[in-house]
Image (cartoon, rainbow, N blue to C red; front, side):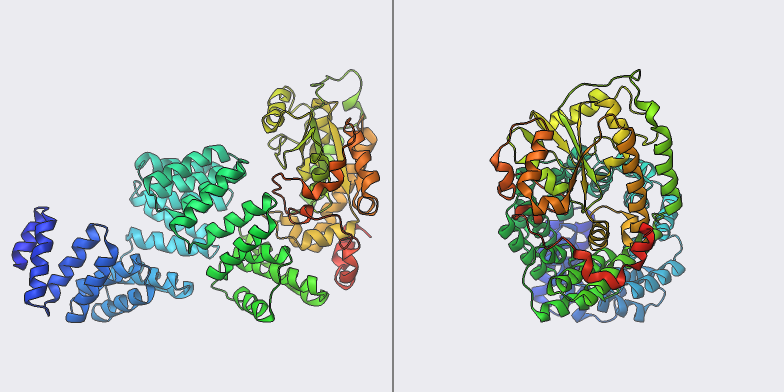
Length: 633
């Protein structure tokens, strides 16, 4: 009967083969091979749970069949049952120490259990046994990628591509590693090559989508993620990436639906709850956001982003809860990004308790981790290079650059640019202005990104394209781009849009510096990981702003955070008058305004003004000498 079943399988008649194997198990219940064949039939048919049950029945009846135990290891890995996979693989290795496939499957089982160092050693043995083993090279690359060894990951994937250029997994994964290294053009080439090789490979579409998000093409990324999900509806990572891309496109409702649909499919997928929390937070639904983050950490306590958001919200937490976060933060097997976020969460909780020493220690630990990560990808902050860039801007935009004979740009009064150091109040000022019915706060739409900061004619002729980005955001009388770093572009802005309103937000330098150091920025700012470098960065910023005050035909309105907190109505009226609009009382109730807020201050602008952030640095005075030195104080 087994011989007939094998013949049916070879002929593609799986139903007949399966029926015969079931008959054998009924007549000879101790026959391992029948269960083995049932497992392989179910596996090939995509019925993994059935395959897992059958293969376990098989190995309990045969302790010496290498192929049987090897297949058990592979199936258990696919089911996510890593400990059973490990046991099966180790049994194969005991029987056959030179079995490269068993070592490779053991690599996967160890990685799933968070035992990355062991996994790398076992993977190295698999490659020693079989140097041309593509799956082992890919697994090695994946481990290196997760450990932050991006160059090593590229080398592992490249080893596969050299001998198997059509290996789409290697191409897609090398695209991911190159993206992390900042090699965006080559990353995109590799992702597109994978798709061209196999358009039905969803991982390649997902990898390309992530690259497009990073390079500020979220609309195109949405299409990539949708393609990945169509190819594999159960692809949870692609589904949350789709929701995140929709969110970045500003489609809050679609993003929320996408996250909720994913949760409906898999309620235990923590990343979907975390993403939903971010959307709810941006939409001003704070209680719902907190509930989503709490659900996230109940499922996956080590998901740093959710823990940090809960801490930033001032959520209550027990001493046991803090101890658990600290234990996770000190676990080397945790991904670096999660450990960083967990450290910042611990810093927030300690800061809220008034324990400055503990808070500073946690923020310092988080920043040191981030600094190491950035330096490992070639993103270290170069103080001297930054100073040279600022001097080039100052030299390029002297007073002659704005004389009356210079070209006049677009006379529109629609654009408003709010600039300043991060954490200086730019989001608050935008929220106050955007509460006016004639104003749209478009957030950080980065209308000038991509242009040279030190070339007066670099953006000449681009007025219409730039204005289009404002008009796409809204048909309001005034549309705000509050990208803080547009202070680098004020010369270009004034030449392109002579009637645009410029608003400069200022805050006490020490409070600003400390707030930057304590902020877990979602975008990499290498200078923000070191107090001394923060001081140097701010000193260069102050030098540039002093220059703009001297040379711009119409300098920015300056709004000081401390004055705004002390006398919100006077400062708010001055702001609205500067925008050329009639006063509206809604601007004083800015915290009630329903609009998406995507910046790091989204918690704060949902509350009435409070003064606890004024003088925040005073509690940390013993630790601020590097910041003072950087500022030149």
